[in-house]
Length: 146
Image 1 (cartoon, rainbow, N blue to C red):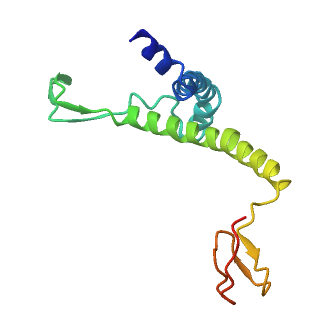
Image 2: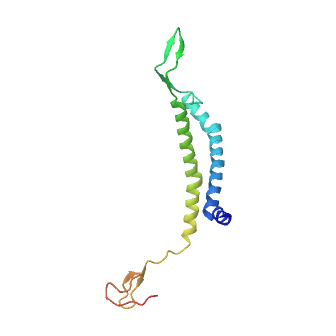
Image 3: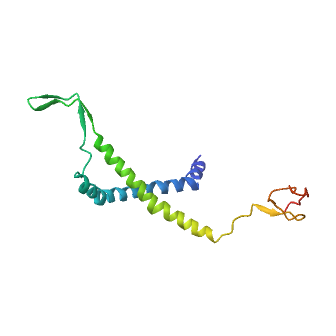
């Protein structure tokens, strides 16, 4: 049973997933600090608020002599706004600084490689036919397997 567990843990997918989760947590920390250091102050310049988490509205609130006696139900929509901004920023950073550069590198790496052929020429009539064809569609010549 221990050997089976060891085989499972050392399987490539499990190790790759573990590395991805650790890197994702570290990356989330970097994006959160970037958001706190740069994006939130920019939003504060435009909107006048640096912290949205305090934004809320109350339903069923009872006030006596100018003091809140029963807060009723509180809807803290500010924390949702803060999380949504953080999500959009994280998605943008991942897209522009991870996905786009990797796609560009993969595209450059593939540019030098020739594509796998999908057709071949019939030896009899020289028509283009699918590479897996066993008989030519144009002249009905039986083709030899390569």
